[in-house]
Figure 1 (cartoon, rainbow, N blue to C red):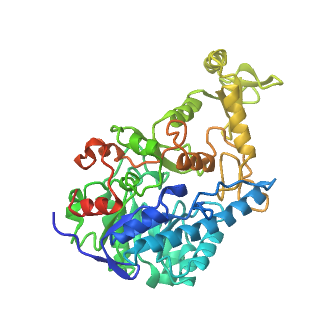
Figure 2: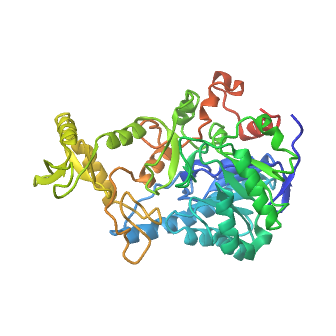
Length: 465
């Protein structure tokens, strides 16, 4: 493979290799600082980042507020403190090499407050902000206020065009790059639109070529595209290098950095990654954000799939084929379902899935009593970690609600991501991963369960492998 050429990113020439910022505490100051020290771009997660006591032990977060809004205020304050903490660790660990970026989700609760708070409190330590999960129009304005570069995450040329015309053209000089995240292959939340088929992946080359055409139209010929999602062996992408249809390009790695010495995930999680097979990562729509996302198939995902399998449509009055009476709940209130669905519901109830929970879509799911109790408890304990949550019906507006019924087919994402980030249960918690994670098992670099340092991984990637 041809040698990688340095690329100007956030004001400095570095290797065109970027660490993807991964959710709650999965990309932290230590991992991102090590990536920057290897002369790449390290990215720590600014989503509810960890803080530590004087002995360096993580401080578990305990909520004291009685309302969702009070708890969200506590979460935002903690997130700002944690983001500043991780920025300092990353900066110190980098030894002045590479670049340090912070990743935030635009749809997370209090996103703008967190950005302002961390960038103010960590001035000079953060060189760029990566932002996706939604349409982050205002991230350019916020980044410009603190003199840092911004990197929107998009999955189509159409999305970038909208962002540019509405806001980004006002702050063109600080647009450090555009992250194209493959919506079929990336881990975590995916940017599939309603017009795209989740079961029919499209070749990223054509989509990125279209993105570059739009960027060139706006005079952004020297602004790099950062390819994210599905990148494993760099030699498989060699035809992208020095390619005028693609232009300046860097490559972002989210999944491979999970399996490094500096990665903060548990040993159980790391061992699980080494056992994955093709097809073990599911693209699904269970997330309370409403977005598609990709995660390892485990007991957590299986139980969510089971909820969908135990689901029937209902009406409150007999309509069409919905003529069979089905009493549900403690008061045995009657709803109307089709005769075949009534038979299915009765079989689920007989099997122990006796609790009927209504959804916003005029359907009912049947779950075990202990599961129903856990769902209701998690909905009540909502801490406003999202700007809008379909699971709890929380929203960042005056009413504090989406105005819709809470959806029991989803889950509390804050709870499960905190659990897996700080525990070793990889079967009953949400485990995000890219769809190429199965390649850990066949890549000779990891033979015998070898776990590299970040520097060893960066050096390996740069060879094409």
